[in-house]
Each structure stands twice: as structure tokens, then as C-alpha cells.
Length: 388
Image 1 (cartoon, rainbow, N blue to C red):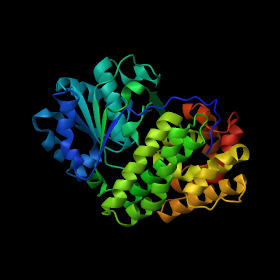
Image 2: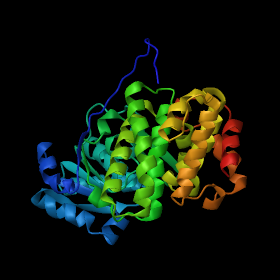
Image 3: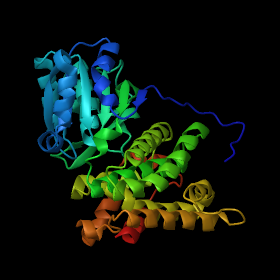
Image 4: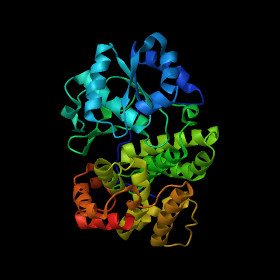
């Protein structure tokens, strides 16, 4: 890819990233390095009940552990963040250690805000609201998909309003990320696939974003190559530490890419569907991604030439339009190869809900960065019908 000499951009990557099997056992040293003494472990209820991972982190923290907050659920809510911050304050926590997938890490970001600033998380919705860094945060992902351990965004659901709230602030980026492939070994096949395709959607959307730039593109394209090669391996053999590790790296790179370049229509629709119909975010992204590629290709087909090449398509002598179609096809084939469903109808989304979903999608902040401007609900409806 080439860039006009007049292009200007800002690139940020402020998180200390530590990678390696067993590196999560160094969490106490990382907490101390941040100048903190007592860390609250934030994790989800399933991980706490079904695995010993949170208790292992608690053990290695020792006297630096202020307790475990394990009330996080998928599509975590504002009420859980506020309760977690109150719990952290009661325990005298001065640091957060998140252990889990995107919901746990995003909840921890919210707790880090409220613990520092007080009030309710609702008080801080929006972009760049904070005037100072949130409570220090060490993130330990147990899924390879969200990249939330390096992003400036948290998505938290308001369960009363059936709406996902977006918090975007450079002050909530985790200070440290510990990428330990040993902690992803027990991830079920379906969740491995869905989170992996979530990472793929981050990479692809950052490339076709209105705000794409060369450093983020480099990270995103290599993430696509890694996901293409290692996601099927991780799905087929959950104990393949090489594949698990490479997927953590890919997720991290894609997270860094979209944290700089932003996402677009795929995420705008997925946020809306997730809030109203409870479809897993990564799965929604996977279903929608090929259809958004085809929609965008009507105006920005050239953006998908490098994507198609990273997916293994021979682009030499092929038109931009054919490359975009190849990218969409290969993304669908990869999702199918991992066993993921291909339609919204298979996830219980009723056809009658599509017009309302299209209208609501226009209000999601992610849509403004989409590479092709989306100004009409009928355009979104067309994508929804294609994905239905």
C-alpha cells in the first residue's frame, strides 16, 4: 500500500506487552512496577466457577491481592461496574488485574474509571471525557479476539435501556498486558473460533477505516496472515500452544491497529444486534464482515486488495473489484472452516427486526469511521438482509 505524502496521522501504543507461556505468573512484579500495593482481580463468573485461572492469579499475587470480583457476565453491565468499583474501594485496591475475555477487561476498565473518579460509570460515557489516567490496570486475556488489553475503548451494556454504551478514552488503556498462551488452552472450540474472527474483523475494519494509516495497516495485515494460518489450528487442537500464542499476538496486533484506525459498519451493526438480541459480539462480526466488505467495495474496492493478498489470494493482474470479492469469499470460507454459523437468522434474529436494527445502527459511533459513508438506514438494511 502507498500513502500520499500529505497524509498526517497520530499513532499510539502505550501498553507494555509481555508475551510467553507462563508469563501470567509475573503479575505481582508487574503490579509492583506500577507502584501499586493491592490489586483487585476482576474476572467473569464462568471462568471463576469452571477453571482455576482466577485462583492461580490470586495465589501468585499473594499479599498484593485485594480480592476477586467475579460477577462479570457476557455483555457486562453498568451496574456491575459500579458494584465492582465499590467492592474495590472497600478492599483498599489501588490497582486492577483483569483476567478473562473482552467483557472482563472492559468491566475492569470501567471499574478503573469509577474507582478513581467516583460516581457512576454512566457519568463518563463518550470520548476523551477523563482529565487524568484511570486506576492502574494489568490485563491478562484468556481469549484471543477482542484485543481489549491494548485498546482505549470499553463497551458496557445499559441493561435497562437495552443499549451498549461506548467509552473511548486514552486514559483507560491498560498499563500492562500479559499474553500467556497457557491460559487460552481450555477455551472451547466455538469460542476460539468466534473470538478469532472478532480479531479478524478488527484487522479488516481498521484497513478500510476513514482513519486508516500505515503503521496500523502494517499491524492489521500481519494479524490477518496470522489468523488465516493459526485460527484453524487453534480450533482443531486447543492444546496447540504455538497456535494459541500466535492467535494472542494476532489479536493484540489487531487491537492496536483498530485502537488507532477505528472500526466501522461491521461493529456498528454488531453492537446494535448484541444489545437487542444478545448475539455474541465476535460471532456477529464474523457473520457481517463479508457482507460489509461487499457493500464497501462499491466505492472503496481498492482497500481490499492487500486484505485479499494477506488471505492468500494472488492479486497480480486482478481488478480491485475481483480482489474485494475474493476477500469476502475467503473470510466466509475461514469462518465456515472453523464451524461458525453464517447467518443472523441462525442466531434468532427475527426478520421483522431488521428495519429497526438498521435505524438504530445509524446512532452507533463506529459507523462514522466506515470507509464508505453510510447516511441512510436503507443501506444498512441491505447489509442486514444479505446477512440474514
